[in-house]
Every structure is written in C-alpha cells, then in structure tokens.
Length: 212
Image (cartoon, rainbow, N blue to C red):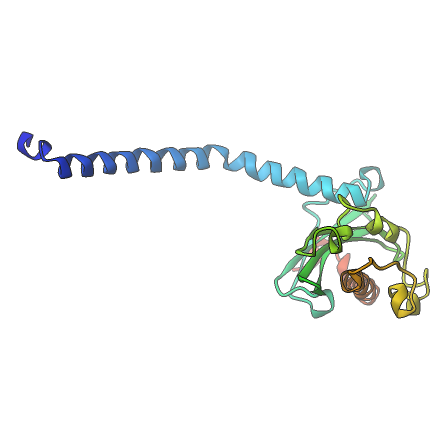
C-alpha cells in the first residue's frame, strides 16, 4: 500500500477522487437543505408578480392554489400547458391571471403575464421574458418604459376591437421608433388573450372540485 501511495499518479488520482466525493456531497447537502426555501421564494415571487396586477385586497382566496391547467392553446401562443390563477372574493370570481406568448416578436417569442377581470377589463399586463433589441424593443419591459402600463383598464370594447392595433396599422397604440414589430406583437397577443378570455370565461372559473 505504501508503495502504491509513493507513486505520484496513484496519489494524485486518489486525491482527485476524494475531492470529487467531498464536493459532490457538499453540493447535494446544499441542494437538499435549501430546496424548501427555494420553492418558497419562487412562490412568493410569483404571488408578488400577481399582486402587482391584481391587488391583494381585491380577492380573499389562495390564488396560488386556485388554479386551472390549460393545455397548449394556439390562441394564447402557448405550446406547453400553462396555469391560470383565479382570484375570487367571497367565492365569487374576480379575475384570471394567465400567460400568453407573442410568437412574432422581432427577436423571437415574447412571454406575457395578463390579468383580466371578469367583466373583460384588463387588470394589468407585464412582459415576463423577451429577447428584443436593447434600447428599442425592450421598451415593452416595465423596467425600461411605462408603455406596457397603458393596457390596464382597457377591454375589447375600449378601445373598439378594430382599434386594437399600433398606430402605424391604424390603431390606438403607440409603436416604438425602429421597433414596430415588437409593439405590434404584444398588442396582438393581448387582444387574442382578451378574445380567448371572452370565449372561455365560464370554463376558466370552474371551481377546482368541478374541474376533474
């Protein structure tokens, strides 16, 4: 054994193996010990994002548990199942918060979180992720510009459904200089989501116990 240990290659190999075992153990321990905290942090972040659109005082149910799983829905641009979060007060439906995807952004898909009150009015809209051009298309991000805030309070009736376009296309909404495609994609995705909501409102608020 001593003879083997005196061989540099064997000694280095054993040391590397020991290092690998210790490192793997530490990573596994860290992952296990922080897993619940990570899940809780993600839950709180999601709740915070929802409450930006639908203020907490407007509902009294556990919105993160009162959910509906939508299959991939072409009208929403989703290719994976997505969760609808339902806000209720005194068991009565208040709003639905759902994800839509604009597949036709300038640099790819734009993922959007949209909250809609039961009367079809937008509670609010936020862009979750995008790859639009910095300084141009990224103005859809509320961190860059307040353009996205204009949609709160609008519906398919206000403005008129035919005006749900950027101004360059004869509609209501400003486009960005050099980034019309981006604004157009977001406006169209919001309109399609409003139309989906209007057509499926009854199904979206089915109580969880009936949705089996």
